[in-house]
Image (cartoon, rainbow, N blue to C red; front, top):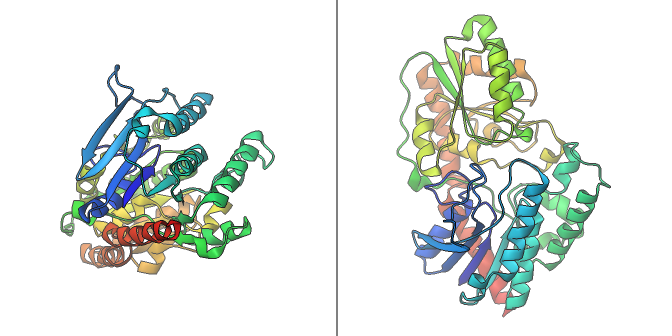
Length: 407
């Protein structure tokens, strides 16, 4: 098959950012499929262009996977300029000469989070006369409503709802990362049999053999990921203050790796709170993050208490912690909790710093051997259910089905 994947924020493993589609595409390329990932030049974390000033686009390759980077205007934060960047990317997907010159695909996959990309991928698939597959990573615009950012009747929500319905109607299949999102989509009129669950996972070829941590102090609890509004990392700072005030300040260090619009404010609040047990680090490329995680003793996940999580969760960072066999504190209010299923950590409700601090203390009070046994359960869980080698097989099957149906 000749496969096009449209993902505004896709990155190579040598870069910081979303590498899901590279990890799905690499096994497919090894099996003889031609995979092209179409992405934007503006790096979502650094906000810098990856193109030279004279370039309108660039074609790169990694392990047999082709990346086409399209030039888009710069932006900072969640501003009107970012919306302009999204729309510019969609226009490029529809009309860029570099894509017109590529061999015709057999199927086009359009990935959210924003639906301009999904719509543009559908229009490109239509013009090529090939099936369109929609991948939904975030339930937009429902996320905006559930998080209180916009009312249901805000023009942005109404507009994105129109695009959402358009993409749902025209998709031969809808891939969702969330285990219960099928119920949401059925409620929007999508036939159940057209929805497929393919969650996030781990490229275990990038992960060295897990090693246990010996006894040492301070123990390190690491948060590795986006510093955004939905992550609610103020709660983690409050848990750090509780630990510090209760005499755990020198025994347990909280390390934040990553970037996002909330990071400067978090750093300022940590200074104002006088936290001596919190450090912030720059984001790390996927190919390097596992080495960083093996230096920690505990993985930490927190998401704010939003109704949208009733459809489940699938955060990369959770599976990354499991892959290096580190126990996880999962602070997400949801019925679908892989940490609880795998018995590889402690789950608490979100936005509860006292429960989070207690969970961190409980893990810190365990012996290194007890934490290691708990972490190994997580490693086995991702090997059996969230290895990208397995997920790529399912992805391939879905695309082959729609291509055959199209014929």
